[in-house]
Image (cartoon, rainbow, N blue to C red; front, side, top):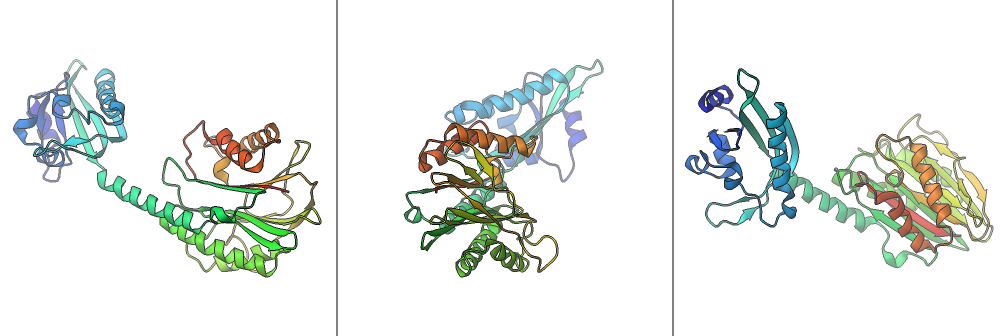
Amino acid sequence: MAAHDVAATFSSPYSSPYAVLSPDLVIREVNWAYMWVTGRARDELLDHYFFDVFPGHPEGADRTDTQRVSASLHRALETGRPDTLPLVRYDIATRRTGDYQERYWGLVSVPVLDRDGAVDRLVICPVDTTGLVRNYTRERETALTLQEAMMPGPATVTERMAARYRPALSGSNLGGDWYDFVELGQGRFTAAVGDVVGCGLRAAAVMGRLRSALGALIRADPDRPGSALAMLDRYARSIDGALGTTVAKVTVNTDAHTLTYGCAGHLPPMLLRPDGGVDALDEALSLPLSVGPLHRARPQARYTYEPGSVLVLYTDGLVERRGEVLDVGLDRLRRSLTDHATLATDELANTLLADLLTDRPTEDDTALIVTGL
């Protein structure tokens, strides 16, 4: 099939960008949309080797951008089947100055077979996603700034307590996790973590409202976290985007050596005992916020701990992995706590993040509190 026949097959007044390449990756045909999106005239494209026209940024990402595109094109040529590259950064030099512009693309490569089943031509269809990626990046940075601004600052962290927030490094799941703690005096303090369903600026804004409300409620009645969660549930029903939020709240009395806690749909806090054993605080679990009947009570439970214990509150990003049963992640957390039971709280917080997160890209943000008792 000749290049102009392939072009006619793909042409339409509303065509997406496409180019027709020979099996040796020489450009044989392009449409106007391809010329427009690449900023190249027809004579700059036709009969030129693809990677001579678009060499990629010479210093970009160790040239992995060029390698990924080349690998995709060759897979299509070798297999005779379409190949899709969902997202790749591939910078293009401007015609006037030669400066490289940051560009992001999706790429579909479709082989055209001859009568004998061999690849005669390769049609490539790039999708310019640069605008979407830049918008996402701006929203992510704004959400992260808002998220961090609403967290307690380093000056409020006590010697016995360490708090960490780790944003998602992949995907768009940033914005919903938070931690909080309040010194109440007379040997008491509270700690909480929560997770808003959703991501981005909206989730960060909902997080801020719920965190502030819970802080006020627990100050009014610090010994009844169950009651605070019940009232927070009623408030959450008035907030668009709060449905399904999970929260774990613990009040600590260091004089009586007791923990009073409640969990609204949240994973149970962990208590590391001085002997290295780990107990899950799972006797006061209830549904997430805004789920189920209105005006229902929220349970709370009390736990008497030994001095020298360590309390750990966390969000699901620390333990959940795609395709894995949640209990596996919880067991991994227990083992890490036992293995590093002698570390100080600050070192333990860092070690937990390193132990549980560094072997994979984090697809969800993570909030973590580690406090010595």
